[in-house]
Length: 197
Image (cartoon, rainbow, N blue to C red; front, side, top):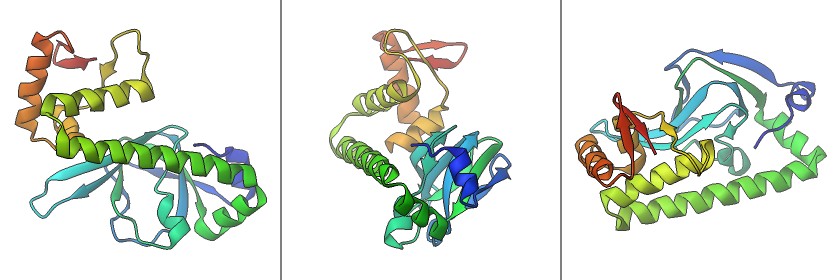
């Protein structure tokens, strides 16, 4: 979902630079802004007391993130961090809600976006409970390819084994073993330690 940056600026939005690994907000913070990425990459995640991480999503150029709490006046259910040097345009929550009142077509786009995300989260929840490690990784790779790639050719999967573990709820050792099995079945390729699917 992308709102034209000219519209956002006209409504008072400003661009802000975040350095790699800089926190944008923490789980439990109250939302103050609508965020849309101009360039870079943002990760939303949860951590446990044992420092285990579950990645909720990765967002890239043109995508917005963390919108639901704005609409329901709740705290953020996850933290967010810049994965690379990132530029984000942000607008105060109150101005953003006024903007949506002025542009009803945007409301429909957000409804579609939220519906897609809820659907994806439902699939993820089912995978965490029901699927084998290979199925979980395959579903993650299919989702990644759908978002960033082309179904007819192999795509470089630009995630570390640890990041794949964080997305799938698996241990990194399980991911490494499973990817080796998938390589033997020619489901994935591993060339110079880079993963292709």
